Image (cartoon, rainbow, N blue to C red):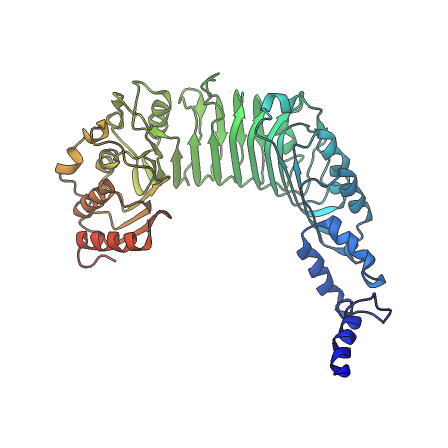
Length: 476
C-alpha cells in the first residue's frame, strides 16, 4: 500500500522543478517542440512569463518565430518583447487592440518594422460609438519603412496615418490598409508605385478618407482593390501586369456625389469589378484584350425612375460585347410599394458563358427579374444563382406578383447546361421558379442546389423530392 502511494509522488516530482529534483520531463523535450508549445499559447506576453518555470525555459520564448498579442496588451510590453526577441527572423507578428490611439501604434510599430521579415497583422477594434470624424481627429502616427516584411495588414479603426515620402516597403508583396484617414499632404499613390514599392503584387485599400487623388504606376502589381475611398475625385492606374481590379463605392457617394474621373491602363487585366459611378466620357478603361470576368454594382429591381446606380450599371455594361463571366447583383427593397419595375431598362447584355446572379430578394419573388436577364442572354451555358439572405415571403398582394410573364411565356435556353442555386429556403415561389427553369433549360445536364442553414433536414428531404419531380432523365 505504501509503495502504491509513493509512485504518483515520484512521478509528480519528475514532472515539476518544484520538488528539488532535476529537469522535469517537459523541459527534456527538444527546443523545436517546446517552441511549438509556446506558439500554441497564442500570447507573446504569457510565453515570456514561462521563464519562471525553470532555467531551461528562461530565454526560450525569445526564439519564437511568431509573436501574438491579444487585446488590452500594454504597448510598452509589446515594445519590450520585441526588443528582447532573439530569433534570427520574426516571421509573424499579430497585434490586436481596442479603441487604440495613434501613440499606442507609434510605441511599437517602428521596432516591429526593423525586426519583421514576414507578416504583420494589426487589428484595432473600434467601438461602435466612435464615429469616423472623431477618430480621425486623434493624433496621427507615421508608417515606418518595413525593410524586410513581405505582408502587412493594418485595420486601423479610423486612426489618422502619415506616409513618409521615402516609402514604406521595398520588399513588400502584400499590403492591406483599412479604416484610416490619410494625413495631408501625404500622396499615397506615389509611395505605393514601383520606384518605392518595386515588389508590391497585391494591394487593398478600404474605408479611407483624405485620398482625393490616387495615382499608382506599378510594374509588379497583380491585384488591386479600392473600396470606400471617401472623397476620391480622380483615379489613375498604370499597371502593365495587373490581372484583377475591383473599384467599389469610391465615386458613388449619395451625400456628395462626384463625377467619376478615371484613367486605367491595364492591358493584362483578366477580372474587372466596377461597383461604382460610371460615365464613359470621364472613365477611360483602355484596351483590355484578356478580360474574362466582369462584375457590376447592384441593380435595383423596383425603384424610382432614372435611378443613377442602375443607369451607371447599364452604361458600364454597354462597353463590352463578349465576356466569359458576368456578375450582376440584384437588389429588392423590403417595401417596394408602387415603385416602378426597372428590369425593362436592361435591353442588352454582353454575350456571356457564365452568369452569376447574387440576389437580395427581401422575401420578394425573383422569377420576373431572373427571367428577364435570361431572356436577354439566351446563350448562357452556366447559371449561378445565390440568395444572399433568407426572409419571410412578402404578402400575397405585393406588386412583385404583378409581373407574370415568366410564368406563362416559353423561353428556350438550349445552351444552358449547368445550374447552381445556393442558400435556397424552400419557399413556394422558389420552387415555382426552379420548375420553370427546368422547362426552359432543354439541354440541362447538371443542377446543384444547396439550402439555407435554417432549412431542417426533414424539410430538405421533402424539397429534394419535389425538385427531383421537376427533373428529367440525364440531369445529374
